[in-house]
Amino acid sequence: MFISLNLTWMLVVVFFALAFLGRIYFYRPLLAAALVLFLAPTYLLKIANWPLAFLEANLLVLFCCFFVDKIRRGELWRFIVGLKNLVGIGYFWPAVLILIGVFLSTIFSVDIKISAGIFKSWILEPIIFGIILFDILKTRRDLTLIVQSLFFSSVAVALASLVYKLLNQLTFDGRLAAFYLSPNHLAMYLSPGLLIGLSLYFYIKKPHYRALLFIAHCLLLIALYFTYSYSAWLAVSAAGFFIGWLFFWSKAQKRKKRILMGVSFLLLILILLASQLGSEKLGNLLEWERSSWQSRQMIWQSANKILIDNWLLGVGPGLFQQYYLDYQRFFPIPYLEWAVPQPHNLFLAWWLYGGILGLVGFFGLIFYFFKTFFSAKQKSSFVPQKGGTSEDAPPPAKDSGRGQLLSIFLAAVIVYILIHGLTDTTYWKNDLALGFWSAISLGYIAVRLDG
Image (cartoon, rainbow, N blue to C red):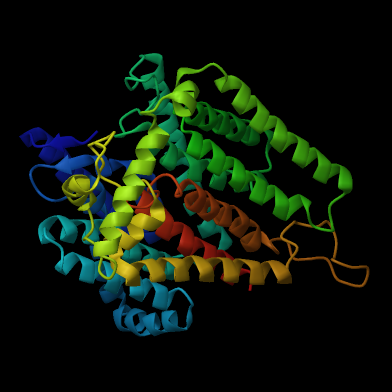
């Protein structure tokens, strides 16, 4: 639910807030990146009639402060020259394909104004932010701060969402959406934070802090549960299984731990299924001819038809709704759902909004992410050991493997995005795009710091 900040006093508050943040950003770039990620939900705050949300204004302030500081220190040219090092990173060319694909889809779209705004907000700005992360993150402590900002942002949203639940401010079908446009979008924001926050248990040792961390995870789980987003539940469970597989299926772990992990996973699935037996949502999904599943199938059929006619360049970012309504004439049965801004599939969305180049770039990015991840896995057990890896090996350093350890949970976030992306569009929103490119950057940096 978008909120327009168009009153004079609101604009004054926005100005001073950005000025205050700018002062922090100029001197503390690491804290700046953490604050931007923590404030990601502020993309819902639109500034007057400008094509600008508070999150975007915040990002622009960060970019300005970052580059002005580089000029002040005489490091701008060094930074620009250093960008050539990105060419040797496998992420570079997929990112270039994405930029070219979405740019071409934008300039050849039927509404370049809408498409250009989305290209700026959901592609260009998140990629620039990811590049800045490459520059400012130097240590494992820096990584931990960014992870904490992602996690606590999700916790703050969960707390606000539970207030909506207590006030019974729910959707017409009794689902929790809070201030988001849909329960699924709320679930898409909570889930990555829930997963990445699990890594903090390996960094926080004091019992009372761990207790607070556990409470925070409980709040996230409760809020996620009340979204009744089955796709999110399934994707989070799969990502959790991915984490467990990496930890407990290694040779270093005892058989009892592997069995315990498997039983716990199955028990969680059974509890979720049992909680929905007899529920109206599950009944509608299985029996109602106008269920969300039936609607999605119709949306996918329409998206496939659109792609047959626009397979090379797509239709332009943000224009699926327009084409979707126009293509009703090709289907004898009326659509079950008319307000459909997204194709409810991550991969269809990339093709529609970025053309064939954007889709290939996205797959290339994911391929290299997991190639880097599993290459690092072969060099490390990922699991902190009390001693060496063998009788003759020396004990590892105090922080040895911490980067690879964190990369497990970042990989789990990408697994979640891909699996939930089968039935929802888990990228094409301001906050989701920012989180995606942050996870990609953090994944590479985490492995590099332990390389």
